[in-house]
Picture 1 (tube, rainbow, N blue to C red):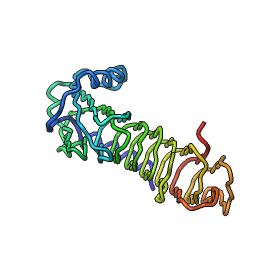
Picture 2: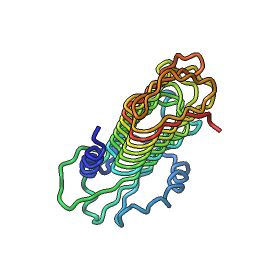
Picture 3: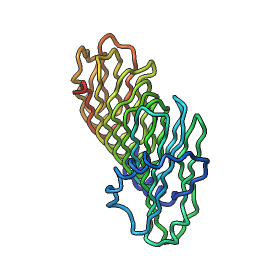
Length: 273
């Protein structure tokens, strides 16, 4: 993977794609949304002067699928014991008329929520930035992809997939199955209660820190690595090691796959404090 080409092409493409449009029936929960928005209104250092804000809430069933994609800016996803998804989006530009371009569609059903940037035509001298903050139920299936900024995710009690992120990634806690690919930045994640499919991380231009809340029985397979591996876990048996190339180990009695490949940085596995 050519990381310079990835970063250049991603930044150039992502900056042309996105802005804001809401189209969905909503139920208002003004107090809760105002609280979520208020926690992040101070994180506006990168905003342009002209702004537009959206605050909405939606009911979601347990295990609903949530997709966030095509966002030209940072994404923060908080979670709580709730059945309501709260959406807060800021769009900013240098000129008010530029806010007519590069929209985002928000679509919701009882079992899904989509926050998706439109593929817009290129407009000269138009630049729109976005910030997205979601507060979700913990029991969801989450897909986040094509984000031109950092991504921070709270505790998710369901599968997590992260793809094509031009920035660092932090996941406070993931469980069941996690898939991470094409990340131009570091990855930090705490993992609990892995399912049979385990963890798969590929094409990361940065270091990877995986923390585990409990003892594991897993097979660790690292290939195409430009960096070292530190496995500070109980009951680790190293099966093979080649500097800057591969690392294979059995953790506990083995079983659950932890697959990591094409990483330009060090890898650390440890118990969560």
